Image (tube, rainbow, N blue to C red; front, side, top):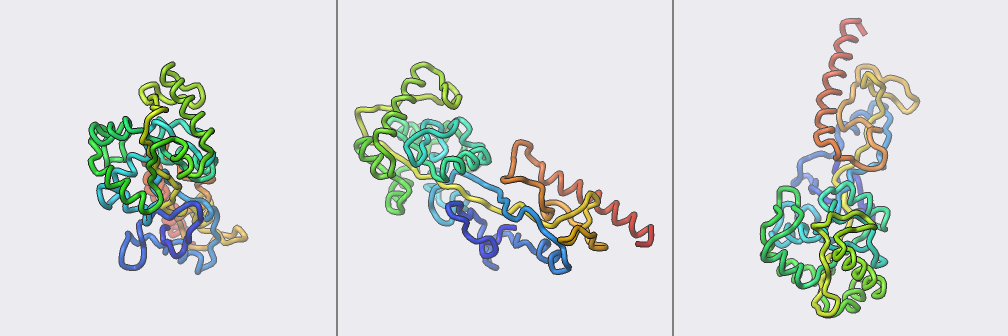
Length: 299
């Protein structure tokens, strides 16, 4: 389900949306799970969420999918693979995988939940005039100039998630990381770019680029984690029959698809795209077969 009133805000994980306030959104408010609970079904895995990252720290994050160009292009710029640092000014992830939102979510979780993408003027100009290296889903494609990026930084500086400074020390102060750490990290990236190899995280050679350490301005975008639904649900047996908290079968109640709990450990996995949809169809067919067999048996 993805009802923000039911899920609440699990800081620092933000609720991405869609908004489900009774007027907006797609209506996935957990009705099936709640109906099963009303007749005694148990649930499991309700702590598990479909994590999604990174997003600009702008509310609601869903506007980065369907809002103004400056938000969509800003979200695209946030995931570019030049340099991501944590709250200590150090790298924590292979930036070449910036489009794999599940990997990003898990890496950001390990790194404290917040990241900053560091950009110098040359990279900023490249984004505006030539476009991104990595796409943002099918919303902002690679190679399409990000002409709205100046507006992104204008509103982002007003809202506290975009930063611009003349020096690295000033940028570090603005984003709250130790300046010596940020400069050391940037120097390492420059060494890796010149060598054409990233020994720390294995970033692709084509994504290695040097930073001008002497001349600004320098830019940063703040990224946060988000989630768009819970992954827990009703406890079932192998026949997809709902179980009560004691493990007993609730007669004539079958649960399928994403209303089942216990399918995921800690986060959603997109390594096999379509896995949720295919499981929904397959579990639905098997549950129907089991229900029909029970009817024929007079149960």
